[in-house]
Length: 420
Image 1 (cartoon, helix red, strand yellow):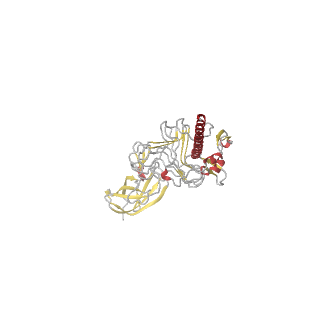
Image 2 (tube, rainbow, N blue to C red):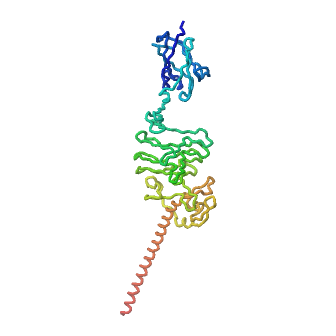
Image 3 (cartoon, one colour):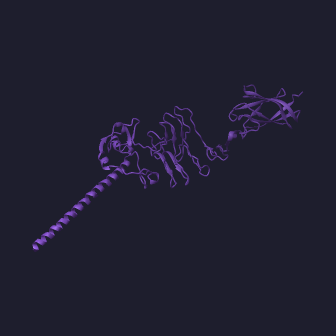
């Protein structure tokens, strides 16, 4: 029978991300020293561990952990203890140990070791910077990951106004959220990826707001000179969702690329049916521009190579088609700005060139038209006019030549009559 002359000396309490023999991630290793009659104990002992919130008395915390036949070698034993999720850094606990029915006194205080705050892959340096996936944090919170997302924000509730990730800075040169995708690290990396999965309502893949006079709501920079990259890429699956939405005093959305074939801002509407917009711009000012080109490049361009076309035929009867169109002055209704404007009536154009007009689902009410695609009709009408005028000129030349021949004959006849 064991004697009750035991003493236990507390060692370090260690919380590890992957502790040996741990069954859950709340298990920690307790190391102690057991003395029997003043000598280091060796053998097997039945031990019970109970957590309390006070040195004496107090309330028990969690369940009692029982370890039968705990091995002790040269006085040293290591026990895997799990009292559930506890805050060992901000709360005070005392461990009561019972060895073979003998309660050791006093209770041993549990203090977080320097390693306890490095749990689950979290590293904290001496200055208080937190690193996840790195032992060398360069910022207050520094997250690194391999080929997965370093930071993922997700809101599972499909209603309300939740945000996956919110970033804010009060610094003049600060960034609420800054993402950098290193091409050498991952060829498919995204600096910041926003994903709106709600199938209804108004959702935002990435939403940026700038309150500064020179602020930028969302700024994307693609610096890689190879591959397909995007300064800003937004995607949403909602019928009324917005892939990228920006609002700011200077720029709602600003995109820049250093790649010779890159896109500062790229918009793509992937739905093969209905009316969708790759990029849509709207100005509420009657003097504003829904779209404004301000650069040295071509203002507008579209794919037009013969390599991708078949069944090529000239527009037939271009003059007749052009004669059915009219340019008009008109006033917009209040919902569309109310200003005076000049243009055409889309429904009228659709009767002549249905290929350039978009309609509502009823197929009657027009949504809009592509004015640029009137150019082919104007070109063919001009060519038809030129051909018509050339034919008239050639006819006049022929008639003039005939008259000249007749005149020459009359002059010869008159000359012969005078000579006689």
